[in-house]
Amino acid sequence: NNLMSSLDALKADKNYSKISIQLTSEELDVLVGRIYEYTLKLASDNEIEIASDDLEEEKDVIKNLQSYLEVQRRIFAEAA
Image (spheres, rainbow, N blue to C red):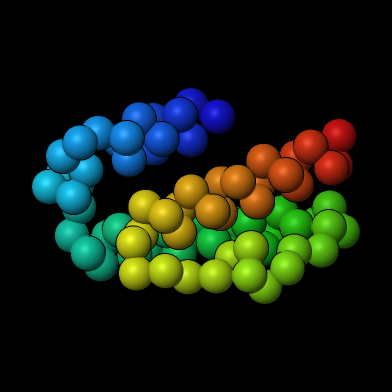
């Protein structure tokens, strides 16, 4: 939830397109890739089906990260 709130605040910033995250593109891809893999495993472990468009990749890594976190939030809610 904290990460989602921070991402929302980041995207709401008027200079969002100019903000730079100090990770190499490879590091960021690895990080978001691992979150994607975790999301799939979390869904599988909790026997929750995810629609393919829920995890559809976009060019914007932050948007991908947000969508993965939203799916995780849904999984936790449904599994509770």
